Every structure is written in C-alpha cells, then in structure tokens.
Image (cartoon, rainbow, N blue to C red; front, side, top):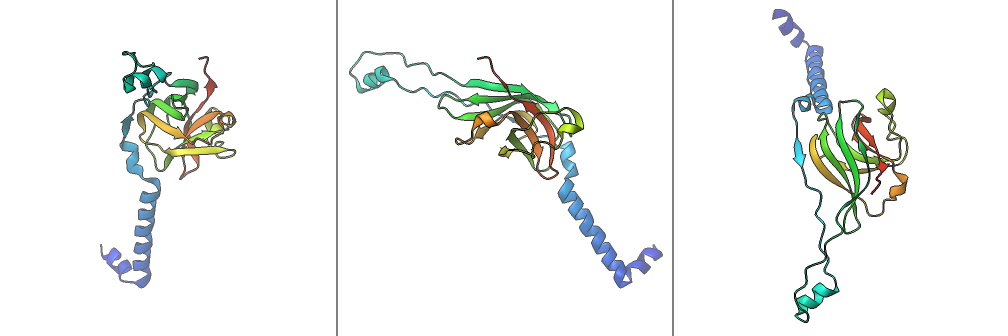
Length: 194
C-alpha cells in the first residue's frame, strides 16, 4: 500500500493511473463484453398482405351491386432463401427474401440465434458465402446494402429492402459487425421454386 501511495505521489504516477482508467473505459465501450451475457429477442410477424378492393368491391361500397366477397390478396411470396452458417460467432436460423403484396421486398430472419455484439447490421451482399475463417471478412469487399441495425440477436425479424435496390445483384445476407468488420454468420440466397 505504501508503494502505491509513493507512485501516486509522483506526477507521472497520476498520469499513469489516468491513462489506465481511460484505456479501461475505451476498452469497455469498444468491446461491450456485457453483451455476451445479454440476449434480445424480437419476434415480428411477416407483414400482412393488404386486401386491395377490386371493381366489384368498389361498386358494392357505392351501393350499386349486391354483396360480394372481397378478392383474396396474393400474399407474400418467398423469392429466395437459405440457412445461416456460423462465422465469427455461432449463428443459426433461416433467411428469406420476400416480395410483399404491394410489390415491396423484405429480408426476413426466422429463428435467428446468434451472439449479441456491438454494432451488428443486416447486410444484403453480392459476396459468396464461405465456410470457416475464409468467410469472415468477404462481405464488405463488393457491393452491399445495409438494411439497418440488427433488432435482436434471437427471434424472427423483417428488414425492408430499399425500393431502388437491384435484387439481381445480391446473392447473400450477412449478420455483419460493423465495428470489427467481421461476419457473425451468413446465408446464401437460393432462388425459391415457388
């Protein structure tokens, strides 16, 4: 204890303590180790199809025709999908590229289970999905679209694809850690037979 007082009594000792405290604070902010023990579960339903009234329903609403059942919506359609594989962290679940009834698109993560981490994003990319360490860093090498922050590290979630995105350019989805430039997990998008 006397030795600690002796070090702190010197000007360089106080500087050393301040540097150590600043380094510890930065390390906690940057790595956020508490997230390894915290899970966030988000369970969203697939956006529902909207019923668009046809001519018969419009006439019925105007009171000019007898009662007619509304047209059934086309509903969401899965265009492509795949299973998530693990990269930097154990990751599992299913990814689907879904066209909604209104023509918009979402990337849907179903039964996602991965580690929580700092600054996780959902990326739609043109990179091939590779097993093991070879696949950890490939997703920022080519074209990619960030669909936003990962809502939760567990559950089922929807991410809106920008309307102007050329979906023919993208072949995979990555759970990307933007802070450390590494994929937690990824899935190749294989065209659906529907």
